[in-house]
Image 1 (cartoon, one colour):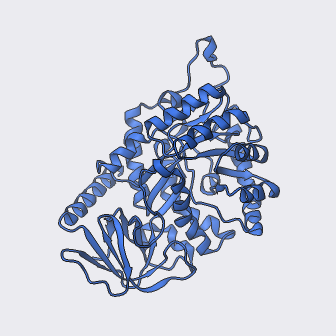
Image 2 (cartoon, one colour; image 1 turned 30 degrees about the horizontal axis):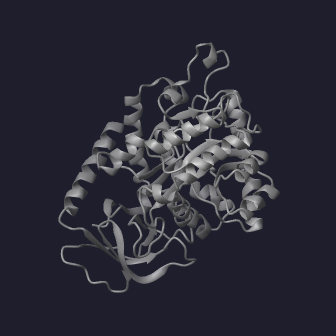
Image 3 (tube, rainbow, N blue to C red; image 1 turned 180 degrees about the vertical axis):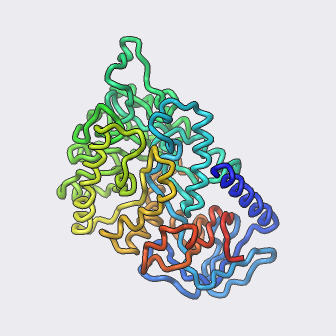
Length: 440
């Protein structure tokens, strides 16, 4: 079944690409537009896409010679979705992540990338994993998938969130070796300022658009409870200085209040998770103009292969989400982006759009849609000169990248229409190329 779906996707994309070879423009008419920002839909505007960019948004645009014309017939147009905390190369069970070879992982990663795109996700910020090759293959048209902003291997200290060795294993000083995820370049372990500088700079050399570090414990690692703080201030400063010198920023995995404050005080600009945060520290994030990248989806199930200790941490993280989001609403904090953090569960990718309805108990539909589009685009822009896709993302305006969806239903009234991509997403476009079109 997996093989047949992959063949069908490749055939569809090849047909679409061939159909567009003679036309670099697409005109979409009769859509109601959510531009990524506005409270209400915009009527009476056509959208002209040329060479992968939105060339014009205006009434009654005349179709250029040779352009493809699509009649939206009143459907809602939105920007392509931006998921800001994903792991494309890690969608297999924990044992498989540790013991499968890299070629198997690459094939699974390519399949997962196509799954993301066909769910309307046209851009991802990959939060840990060796996605450099996958990104290149997508950019070159070898496989189908979203734009990838790669972090490369997440950097943690020994005994931190990137260190997946079991307690009986020998230390490096005793002749032991790192675990398979470190060896394959999906994770990195660094201790002290010199090692942190090497790890961060190595990621930059390989093509990371931002740096990811772990400043606290994680649910998927063995040795670090969620309450612990990792990396000294000097080590964090080394990472943020290395990133700043290359014009980009650092995102930090952290659940607890003390770690969040240490990360912010030492230059981190994006807090990943934050589930155990208190009110004062969330206000501190707001006051310091730092982004929050939370997720709900991953905490609604226990990933395959988790031990009972890992599962207990997972449940602990889930229990903190309600207070975090309620507080954000109360203090008017809106620098919040969208994502799933689904890991070690390829079958969960089928429900990845469920993040929309999970958030509906705290946020209005327009707030959720902004989180999934324009807010992500704003944060991605912090990679500055390392931005692999310069230009506006997550918005529908002239000059922006043409990642577009046509949706049967109005997500500003009922955000649940975003959860059924097969029934409701009638058109999916990335970089001006149409990957799904049921309107012909």
